[in-house]
Image (cartoon, rainbow, N blue to C red; front, side):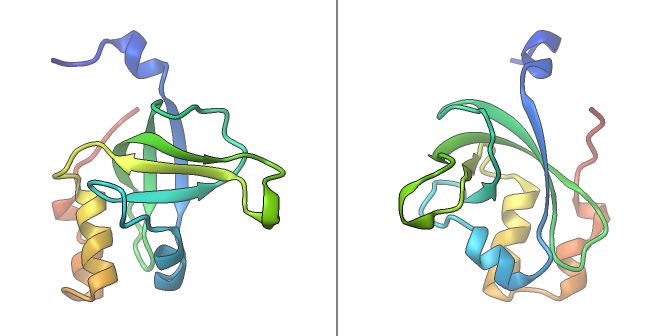
Length: 125
């Protein structure tokens, strides 16, 4: 069933550029089903909220669109100096962003394979 325009417009959009594989490793949440990413910031979302994520991986020029769900939240001013932000879970198990992240972190394929625009879906918001 397709989401209505009202449902789509109520979801937040996040853009995240990850500049290095080391940065990707520190942001990736492998313990989350379908994979997930921690996104630093002071987002107002709550656990369970769905969000759109536009992700740019290291050495890639394209933005990868993905639907995600908030599964983790570290509030501003958290103990032990933890960085504020949200952890998101990729909703679709066949998500190309999740697949490209896993391939990049495992060292599968070449750098160009991770950035191949022909395998990435386009999304206009």
